[in-house]
Length: 149
Image (spheres, rainbow, N blue to C red):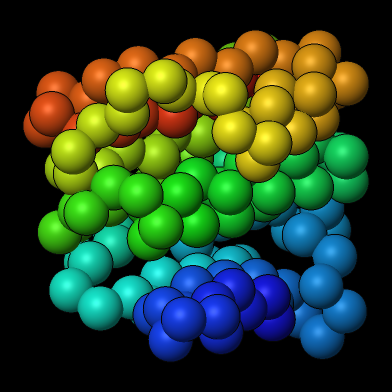
């Protein structure tokens, strides 16, 4: 379990990914059935998790990159977005997997300049993927990560 918060009595972000008993996601694929719990607990922010496409196991490095990108995006929603809702999508394509995290908050004035998102870009590049940061259709912020599968 990874937990953020603590200083200044901020709400906590808790992300638990538990597959079988050993936390190895690649054995069975990153799916809603196999990920027993992905929760975003923060005051007043509703979160939904969706998986689409032909689900299949991914390499450990790719799964780790997607997990850390989702973790960073959810942390940023809690800290900066003033959002009421966040949606997390994992979409399996024929040759790639895409992670989308989109909130309905206030958007970003200088997206991608913080250390966390710079780290996401670096990790994604290491596995041959790409990152897109943009305004969400809801007026908030959207992070899209596409990695080869």
